[in-house]
Amino acid sequence: MQIVSINPFEALLGGILLGISTTVLLLLRGDVAGINGMITGILSWKKREVDWRVSFIIGLMLGLGAYVLFFGTESLNVAPLTNEPMVMLAGLLVGIGATIGNGCTSGHGICGIARFSTRSIVATLTFMGTAALTVYFYY
Amino acid sequence: MKNLIALIAGVIFGFGLAVSKMLEPQKVIGFLDVTGQWDPTLGLVMVGALIVMTIAHQLSKDMRKPLYGEYFRFPTKQKIDAPLIAGAAIFGIGWGIGGFCPGPAITAAPLGNLPLLLGLMAYLLGVMLTMLTKQMLKPTAAA
Image 1: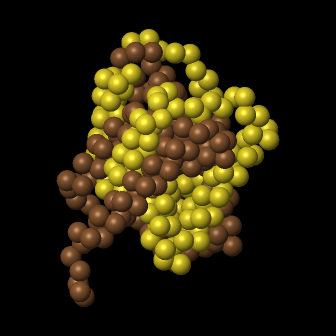
Image 2: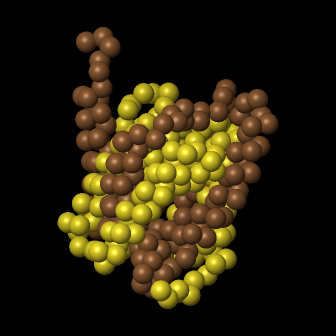
């Protein structure tokens, strides 16, 4: 295994920002910031559940806008590494899996592990495992 | 006010994803590629997020209720069941192929990368199909 050189400062700072965001939602509103949970909440069309989740989702895109204002888009390479049919298959599996498993990287990986939830720790180890195996065989 | 809090939290999250390069599938796949050229970025991002969030969760235990809410809405499920394991396993396969998960895919949408937008639409379709299936399988109390 070779380790590629990265900017650890950016990674830690970005991670701390994610933690601050989930902290704001938890301590101010009492909500857990699972992004997939927000999408299922929005798609359930229960009026009371929709507004704050839509606000957060709009916020995500405004956050990207703020980043682009400061740093431009040149430093952002969001292109997937595989062909379009496979990208769509990937999206489909991500949606099905996160909805069956009640959580994604943010819900289980950040909020759940921070609560030392056994379910979230098991889920995170499982998806990290199958993802690493997938990358090993696919790429 | 409550929606404004959610909006601000969203802005911080989206900005954090961009700063940490987690919007980039190559960074995610680089982290998962443990036998190749390993990119530790995602691990450091999680360490940063977990340090802050673990402290926040401890603080929440000493609070009767959230500052602007009635109660803390923690998930109540405790059991490790088949849907949890199967769902996480399927999620991981998709995440490994595409290198994106829901948060980054939504955040990066305005950049207009067509393949990523197709992935995002497929993701939403996957969520909807699963919700519908769950709904149909659920034993109806008042049929």
